[in-house]
Every structure is written in structure tokens, then in C-alpha cells.
Length: 527
Image 1 (cartoon, rainbow, N blue to C red):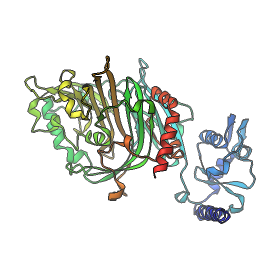
Image 2 (cartoon, rainbow, N blue to C red):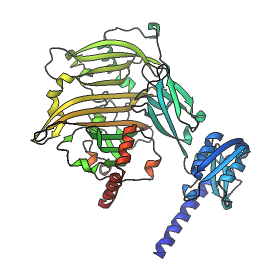
Image 3 (spheres, rainbow, N blue to C red):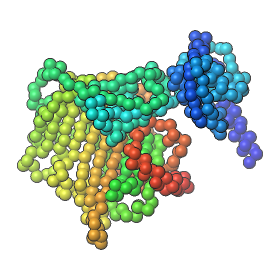
Image 4 (cartoon, one colour):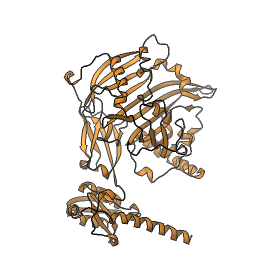
């Protein structure tokens, strides 16, 4: 045990020295940045940890801290009130350990042991690791203050972002590398909201979008036949969508409810190898980066069937790569198309085209609406599903295994997908599937309602250092994650970009937190 302790200390010492070697080998002037420490600010902190206090003053001074978080583990909470005090003096009141000192790199303040302090020039390109900050907010319309669900929130020109939940709320983690970027919020029919990241405080953002009305003069006049517009959009896929492979980092979640009470809630961070849109017959490769799941154990034994969906469902909802009948020119004669509106998205005019099967079609087909940009003719979104009257005919499509004593009937099947423009190309941004079923057991008087949601939002895009995963790293898209043994990393889930769960999900998590811990323990035992 003693030798193991010595070995751990040696490894930690080597890592710390390696970290500090990077710090003292920088090559950029520091003097110009030292004024950051001389800035005067006012604070009123109450019962905060050192980490939270540093986050608070960083936001006020528009800077970032870089340090080993273990330095302040188990330290007492502090309270501090000061008016127009020099930043370095304030910083020393928070970090009272005089064996630590502060070095400035651009707008980074690096906290290091004093014995490593150096007057050598520094460069920001070699900062040992990036600091992060969390941004929270709510998106509503300005006139009626109605929440706007599934609004697109992201960094302009970069595939870093998320979407708002059903209550219009969102949470996003940004790194110090985004300090000079602009946050953009978009929603169909509304003007964009934009704010520099440096202007965002630690308080919750209240984003009120203004409705955007456009005149016909702003719209590129084309043949107003909606079917012709869709065919033209399909013909421009090669121009509007990436023809090279890319790596996506996506937040994925799925849930199963019984009578509106959560039985399973699962969320994962996925790494996805996305094939070019010219290779639409290949299946994208998926690797699980992190995952966690929650069971309400008391309700699990009541499930007598499995619901299709999950990761495969999210990938198949990329309708540009996996064209459904309503986008395939060979089957368009089965549909009726109508140009229902001309609106805006991302401050650009868009066509809203409704589609539904022709009345003489006996096979159940999808119906819904397409959103197509008027100038580029890029397909930027779609909402679609099956008509309520045709749902009884679809049971076998969605139920893979059922108990002979159980009668299952679909009650709702709805999907949504949208894309984000990055440097003139459109990338998959968000997919969502909502399915609901009525289940009647012959031995029970009343039927029960089961519903499942599967959802995926892209939070990061890499088109430069694209890596194709090794075979042993990937999972089959058809994998039912809720039945897999998934390791739970508590530290990771504290600092990761995510889609903020609705309030009722948060309550469900609170109710069954003990079950969550048990799942994590059972999983760790099997690995």
C-alpha cells in the first residue's frame, strides 16, 4: 500500500511538472496583459466555494481561470463584499494560499505554485487546458411571452450549440476559446437574437424573439409549384450539404413513460462518423463517449414489449441522407404538396410546404411540412408523422416484440429534423421522435399509455481532423441502450453541453435518484 501511495504521488508530481513546463515555455508578452489584474470591480459573494467565486469574478472581469481544480477541494465556503477593489487584491482574498500565484495569458489567469513563477514570455496557443462556463436561458416570443420549444441556440459560424426544451429553456457549456464569438438564437418566423459571448453575465438569459414579417419583394421569385421547389431542392443536395465525411459530437437522450410517469430516462454523449451526403447508402458509425441512465425499478417488470427507435431512429431522421417517399422524386406522385407560407429562419426567407398522401392512396404514408430556404433551396427542416386515422394499421412497424395477451395500438407518431448552416454547408443539427401507444392487457380492465421519445442534438462539428472509428469502438445503431451496461461517470456529467430536461423530468430524476445510483453501481460491477 505504501509503495502504491509513493507511486501515485510520483505520477501526480510528473503530471504537475509536465503541466508547468508548458506554462513556463510560452512565448508572448505578458506586460500588456498585466492590466487585467489591475482592473477594479465590485462584488457581493455569499457562501460560495472558491471555484464558484472564481467563476463569478471571472464573468465580471471578462476573463477565464485555468487551474487544477483539486487545489480547492474541501476548502471552506467564503463570503466577500467589496466595492471598486483592484482585481488582484480581490483575487488574493479568495485564493489566500500564498504558495499559489497568478500568471496572465491574454484573458486567461493561470493559478500556479509560486515557485514556478517566471518572467519568460507566454503564448496562449499552449494553455494547458481550457476553462469552461455554463450559460442558461429561456427563449420566448416578445409579444405574447410564449415559450418557444426547439429554438436553435449556437455559436455563429461554428457547430457548437443546443436547442431549447418544451419550456423554451436551454443550457450550454462554452469554452474560453469562444470568448470572442457571438451566440445566435434562431426560430422559424422570428428574427435572430445575437449577443457577444463576452457580454453574457452569469444570470439566466431572458431571450425575447421578435416576429419577422417579410414582403414578397424579398423572396426570390421562382416557379411557385411546391413539387418543383422540392425537386430542385433535392437536385441541390450535392451543393448544399457536405460531400466529405465529418465527426459530430451529439447529445442523445431517450425516455420511456408509463401513464406519464418515467420508467427509463437515458442520456449519452455520442461521437458520430458521418458519411458524405453523396454516400447515402452507408450507415453512420456511432461510438458512445459517456452515458447514464435512470430506472424506476418498481415499474420495469410491467413492460411486455420493446419499442423501436433510439439511435438508429435519430440517424434515419436525417431525411436528406435517408430520403423518405415525400422527398424521393420517384414517389412524389403519391403526395399532394401545397405552398402554405413564406416565413423566415436565421434571418433568411424560407418556403413552408405542406404535404400529405393523396386521398386514393391505401398505404399509410407520412404527412407534414418542409422548410426550404428560398435562395439556396436547402432543406433546413421538417416536421412530419402519420395521420391519426391510419395509426391502427402501423402496429407491426413499431412493435418488435409483444406479449400474446397484450393488445398494442399506436396513438401518436411524430418526427422532427433540422439542419444548421456552417460556412455555406448544412449539417444535421437536431432530430426528434415522439411515439405513444395504448396497451390493453386481457386480464386488466383499463388500458395503459406508454410513450417513448428519442432525441439527438449536435453540439460540436469537426471537418478537419476526421477519424473513422475502429470496429471494436462502435455500437450497432439498433442497440437498445437502456438494456446495455453503461458506466456512469459522475465527474463528467457536471460539465457538459446538454439539452436541459423539462421540469417534470428533473422531478422524475429526483424521485428515483436511488435507483440511478443502484444502476451505476450494478454497471460498474459488471465491467
